[in-house]
Image 1 (tube, rainbow, N blue to C red):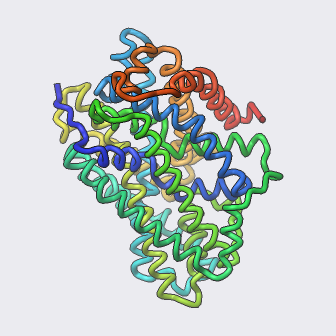
Image 2: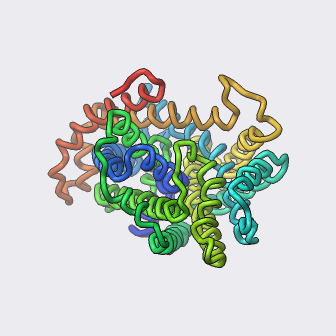
Image 3: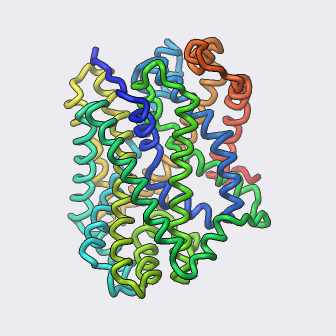
Length: 457
């Protein structure tokens, strides 16, 4: 049996788990969902969803991982031997692998754009130039693939060193770096002339724009933002020691993740307002961070070219750091599974995962160029991966985690884990079980049906 490590400190465990949750979705998906769904009103609903939807499922993943001290696939086998519940854990492993393969493509783009920003290549470009720059790069037969490989190898470098010397040590470096960079960018953005309308949009709710779809979108964003259902949190929790306060850790991770998302909003909306640029629903995903925002930064700091340069460099460095904390956790899900289930040395398990992710990632990277005409259901390879993960794997996994924790896990075991054997008070226990049994599964089912156009609130 492969020896299992633990995180060496409470801080390391919290930062690693927070790094797993924080990613590119916090930087681009949250601001755009906020822009499309009413600004501050959406944020208030989102915060409620974090509490009612995100925290109970995160708590469940932490409980399952810490109790079993196993990879996410074996964890469910231990708690429910001889039952089909094992497939929930295996779905988590598959989802982590599946997402890493296409997520690393976008992560690789951040390296290219950081280099472009560092070389001051955005200076003097017009609004029409940025779509051309992105199209030429993303359709290039070599560059995107090279950066994809570089990013996965960078992830491999961290994971192969293990839990304490790799994941924990680098989390203690990357997460503070992320906070420092994003704090500096927020200060610069909100200090710009004419930024006040962007700030007001984030602080003053307009409930006239709120309808059923806004609520469903807020639930979906809360789910995706916390990286629930892909095995990362369960795997990381298996490295927690028995003294870890699971509820406190859940709250701390959710606060960090939400704070990063809100701060991203305070970078993007004030900068867009200062540039006289309105973000549209089309500015989502890659088009926001690789086409719209480079132009926004140049327009917003037009009178201070050196500030536009510094802002752009720091922003893409921020994206690299945010992406890396997420790819590390996704890689670890599969590496842990391979090492424990097939009794492989960690280095070999990590190498298998790295090689497989690169192979699939190449097809995703080329779907913007050489393979752009290869489509299924009118979707490119990259789009198929993204749609499958977002609309099927993550919500289905999260829903079954909630049902498993709420209905299957023994209540005594559940309470013992939350209270650390009765040493911590848990006055919220009955409410938590009720939410996991009735509220979260129905909310996630509504999200799934909404994604397929089968339900409108």
